[in-house]
Each structure stands twice: as structure tokens, then as C-alpha cells.
Image (tube, rainbow, N blue to C red; front, side, top):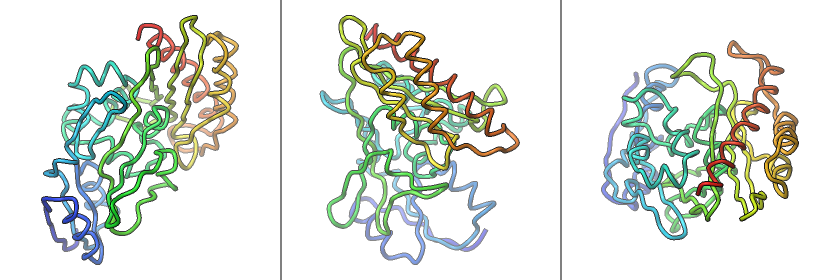
Length: 288
């Protein structure tokens, strides 16, 4: 590992200043990706900017209009929050799939998002939930939808001097819920072959009035699939609608072949995951 410096600013402004002052700086919140990378693929010198002690990054608020999850809030803390799990079960179950129980005590969904892996479990779940990135910078900050945040394999939309403060998620309305499913070769602690997040809203008759569908691990980035959502809206999530949504996910995917599965296999699996996740989301929405 190369030489590095470490700073732990106590305010958002000080973090922005530290990021701007260093020749190369990286933010650490959980560190479960960063520390592994520093020991393996990227040993170049840098300044580590620790944001774990900021009040803003430790926010976990459930408001009347939105849910806020700070960048330093661990997956374990999210899954210990019963109200959050009831409101956003898809987002919390995605976080619960990141690593082992020990890893989840430190890992964050915001770190998973910034790491920008095509197979990051939290990303399609956040996209399906309509999450918005709260980005801090020297100009007062900006917001960006999660589906626009990841720009490629391992790259994101953060500009120099910026960091992710947290994510804002619209509070689900009545009869609105989400779900996230992935497929892995092993029973746990593996990287997704394919993943799918679905959020649906139902009216009093059980007709789907709104939906968002996002897929992961089947393209260079997790992507929103409007055609899959359109297939669900206007019906009662019957077999025909679920089948059409799954087919839309297959059509939107552009997977690779690797040791975990062929491209053809991934296209089939993502359709199955979409159908199942939409059905689960629908069941949850009926009981919400």
C-alpha cells in the first residue's frame, strides 16, 4: 500500500475544503470497498477524508414527505429500524444483502452507490424507490436522481470537491411498497448475476397506478426500465402484466458473459426476478 494521509473534518464545509486541497482524495464512510481496493487494485497515494462523524451523514429520518438516509448510516442500522423496514422493505433488504452480518455493521448503501459496481445491490433498489442523491459541494450542494448518478463501471457523477451527503427517498403513499430480488450462485455473500428492484402503487381496487422497475448486473450500470413499469400500470399485476414486465427487462438488458453466468442466462434470470419482485411488491402494497 502506498503512502496516504488521513483527515477527519467535523463539518460539511471542512470536508469540501479537504477534498479540494488534496492532490487525490477519497471519502471514507464505511470503508468496506475502499480498504479492499487500497490493498489490492489501487495502492496509489491519496488523502482519506473520513465523514463518519458528521451529523449530516448520520441522519436517518422518516418524515411526512421523505426518508433521509445519511451516507454514514450502516445497513445494520437501517435494518434495525422497524419503521424504515415497513416503509421501504426493498431498499432495506437490498442493504441486508451486502456482505456478511459483520460487514453490514459498517457498510452503507451510499457507499455501495458511490462504488458504482454494475452488480451493486442497493442501486436498483434505490432507483426503483425514486431516490435522490444529496450532494455536498462548495456551491451549496445539488441533487441528482440515483438513476443518473452512476455513469459507468466504477464511475459516478461526483465532480472534484463533491461528496455524497445522503439520499432522499419519497415516503411511499398508502398502498405503495417496493421489493428487491437478486440471483447469486451461492446461498449468500456473493455478487449478483442479476438483480431487480420494483416499486408499485395500487388503488383501492388493486389496480396498479404507478410503478418503477430497475435492473442491475445486466448492463454497465443499473438502469431504470420504463417499459417494464408501463406493463404493470393499468392492470392488477396479473400473469400477463408480470410476463410483459419481465420481457421488457430482458429487452433492456445488455449483459456480459463471465464465470457467474452467460449473457443469455442473465437475460432470462432478470425477467424472472422482475416478475417475482413485482408480485412481492404488489402483495406488500395491498397490505400497506
